Image (cartoon, rainbow, N blue to C red; front, side):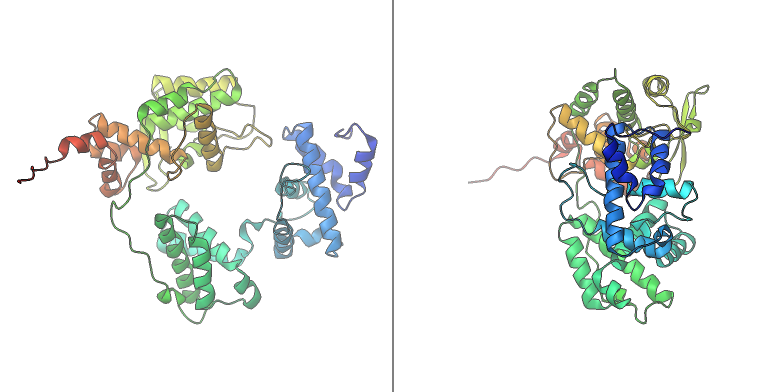
Length: 417
């Protein structure tokens, strides 16, 4: 098999072949070509791997096998945390492509497991996730969030040094993480930390249950108002998407799904080809939080836009998910990818979003629900469409329908002189 030609200049090719990962140069090049990388992206990845190899040599790493298991996770994490300025010569994070390089080595059988900093303390977090799923019965999204904060707490400097917790270090961690967060999310962070500390004591990993010393934030029902946009602004954004390009077809289909059904971003990313019944004009949605199966009518507009993307914009791939990233590797679209798309499309339409509102799929969801309230839909109907288990979750939209609130307002009696 002929080598994949990445560089025109032979000197560059020779330079990277002589690096720490030189033996695996062709393996990674073939992997990138297979997954549709463009030449420029391939060059950036190769340079990134070359720099990582130099770092490993400085650390005294001799064998590729040292990248397996927890030792590999620690090496990868220390390398990622060694950069403070990630945008110099390449104008891109110099760690770009590391994850996919490790995946390529694993698929080629060079290493058994690809290291990832996503779960450095694998044993602790894996057992914790099983506890949340089997004992607590939490949803996948809640488990993911709790596992994220458990991992971040375990990575804290104090725990890395002592392999134990104390109340002072916990308070310092909470203070640092909650400082930039909104009030509503501070409670989420604290609840996640309390939950993990309770588990650590329950499983015998810590002597004391430190969660009892952490004060929970006080919150009240309907204390906040979700950010919404006027429906004409949403329609203006959607109308500004250029549907003549593959990316425009994808983004338009997603936007139509959002404003037709008020779906969460995770529900869109998990939408597969099998979820769409073209013969019966239905679309099957499993709501992320309630895990309720919902069969919705496939409207003519939604069906036409999805079909247009599948026929003319979606690249050929082994994945069954409907929506894919537009850049290599062509993997299923992520929730962060949807949020990024929405922000980009609003900017293109010249619509400035308020700084204090969520700018992802939930902005569409809240605006959609508010639009239904203004159109006279009942809270029961809205709750069923959005997949709410608790009617309280739907009642908040009675506060966003400002026009209806004005009609319900009582007249202020005149002041008697």
